[in-house]
Length: 468
Image (tube, helix red, strand yellow):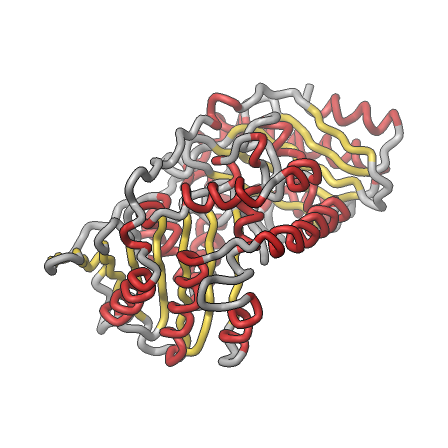
């Protein structure tokens, strides 16, 4: 299983698409959210009895389809005692149901050349399968069976514990990965948003089967799930197949006593600037993340902030890449990125460099951030970033997996959809003044820093100087 815990500069999918037409049956409400053209790109949504939402995007010109189920639960919904439970559960749902063993689950999709996976983030979890269009009913049945009928076998809980501990060890061995978790701790401390998605060795070892089973029953309620599919499909058939799969498990009736999504309080736990978290590790490179609070995924400033992030560190022509790598040769990898949550966000810059280059790299990063905060970007830089962001947004939606991700996440996080043209319109509408204003608001603050590597005392001192 894969996981996701950081967001690149690609903008989040917002709310804001008007409903085109509506029809109502006896028990299922169906709406067309985006009409599309000649059937292509049509996005429709149905709400089943019990509140389960099914949303699809039709692409009749392809021969594949991707089916996914999104759960509105992530690591920020965990208590300290349950740290890592969401990701643990992601693994366990692949380990057998009342109808299928773990082997039968994997073999069913392998037999038709399909791909099946899942990922856990701080605010949601997604399980998905990509198959030939003719095999979409199989994907719907298998993934729905996993989500509704997992047995959470005690023996599998124990065997998978070892797998997750290995995954934690693998992440700890990759300092370029681990430093982003460290930066989350720098900014949020020992809070749900500051703790790693995977949990820790101690928290995973402490999780019991009954705890995970209660977590499953509490959070995998139909009212907290979104079913999404994209590709060469019929919306009506997908709805019928999903309903049959959930009915078979009696899952549509599991709404009594369902708990609402917990309060989002990350904005109240964000720490002030000037903090430094440093892990001394025997790595060849030093891995650095310098950043400050950003904006939430609901904030309209996310559009100019995405343009700003692209111009600063979104490609080979960006300011940081040009200054740090091309002109100075101080690093191989450097980029900027944003992380937008329900109520808060982060703006961050990553650099991986030799320890001897840390002072110069941090000096350049701070100078560039301060310069843009005070003077903004030029009109040409903004136009260039808008073009780059527009192109990468469209190119990132050229397969059924990306489209399933877009419609599913949009429904789960915003409750509405936006067409590609409307997204491009939002990006194109960003003005140089918008970018200058968000740069002033976000970058004109004292940053914090996370670093991993083997540094001398003098080099370590430069970490604190960079956030002074």
